[in-house]
Image (cartoon, rainbow, N blue to C red; front, side, top):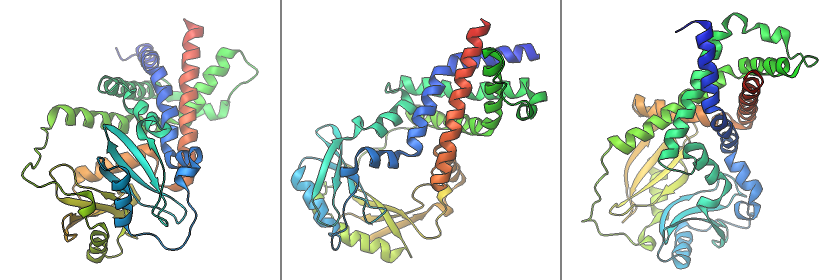
Length: 351
């Protein structure tokens, strides 16, 4: 059962079952690694503004949103990371998720788009569930298992010659089968740790999704709480309260109250925040009725499960090390794609 011949058979089976899905994962994953840059490149008029004077109060931005979308629920507002970046509001309007871009200096709406039709949202949905939730999520989870199985069986089968692939290289003057085999082994060793990390963290996330879907009971809404009008939320006062209560707090996202809730959550970071602990290390919960500070959270004080989950997420999407890390991730993802394609070619030539 565990002879080299059997292990090689398992290696081929894993590759054949997961091959096309692994290719899809590498392409969509590469887009997600640089999703912010891709969105800015494709939509410069919606993501970039000119610096003109001082920024408008957040209450004015919210009032403009309410005037333009009176029946919409504001999910969150993503603040600018740079002086030339537009503010983006995430709304639910008539059952449609809408991204509204706003100029922080004039308070004007630049434009709006259906969030679910954007490339980065399509790429994420394809990456996670093939646009076929929930069945697609199980399929992509299986693809992650196939990638992990393929890496482990391949490593075991070639265990005696792993490092020798660098000495041999790719023998371009040989037959196509030998060229494909050399590329398959050489890039497989180069991307070995990357593929192990991607498959393990991907399986972890899909397992968490299954747990949430079948293990957690829906949280009851507080129907007794009076809904808060969007324009009645003192956003500027809440921001001032959060900054005054958490030293050196740098807000980056405002989560607005859900149905039956009365709190505003402002997320961001501090100068000493650890990027591996998540995109937002610090958050302040504020009363949405009067702007008073309620409580704070710092990822460094979180439990082990929270820390592990966010470290895995940062490792999976490569968002922790800037542009150099992102380029390395994309190159390794492309190497994984070539390993998959050459493996399929080898199977075809040997069948």
